[in-house]
Image (cartoon, rainbow, N blue to C red; front, side):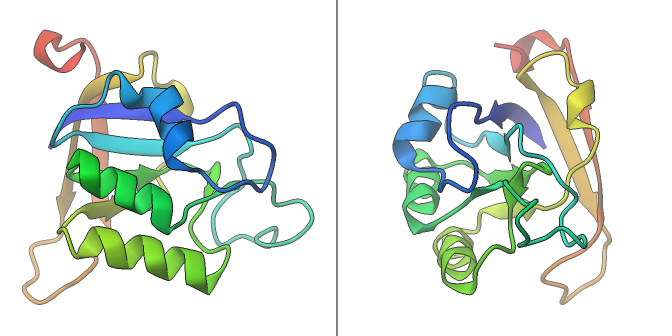
Length: 152
């Protein structure tokens, strides 16, 4: 849990890779060590849906380079809205996971209701199921807006 930034990447063409320069433009000046970053774009479709990897799927992609940027910035967690593909191709997704998992950076996949946010900086918490040995788990993720120390 902690300070979170909603990074809605709006200035890329459909099916583009999110690169470090894109993250600098979107949230670089706001980002702090140990922040949670939630990636999204206007090209939203439900993850793992019948539209995944079809001509209708215009979502943005992650890659090794942007993972290295997150690791360098020492974020604690990267989350994904419906505007970012986490299943576009094996090479990109594996490289992204390998870089961040080596730094113990957590992933929050398939986040919903991001359109309800009224600000791009907020408090966020997420709680996994308390089962020993799991490497992934469903979570209850929530944002609380307006807490002063988590709002700037």
